[in-house]
Image (cartoon, rainbow, N blue to C red; front, side, top):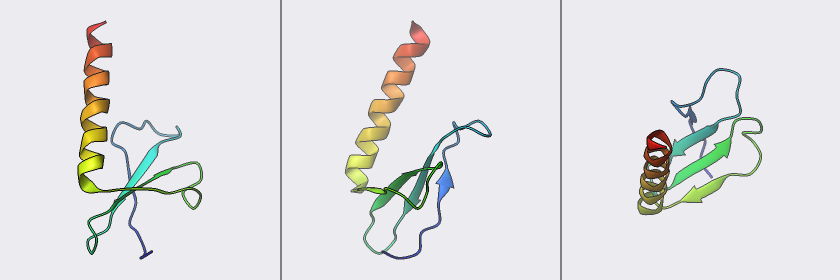
Length: 67
């Protein structure tokens, strides 16, 4: 795996355990890891699957905001 540049989620307050995301240009793969152990488990997804995940998470957040 190439060296990845990780970005912390914009929804992450300081000091909390957060999701970090990195994209791989050559393959287009999206990588996700947990900030508490960024060298630990890395989930890799295709761009379409990652977009679907984000869409689902945003819908869930909108539903929570309405409740």
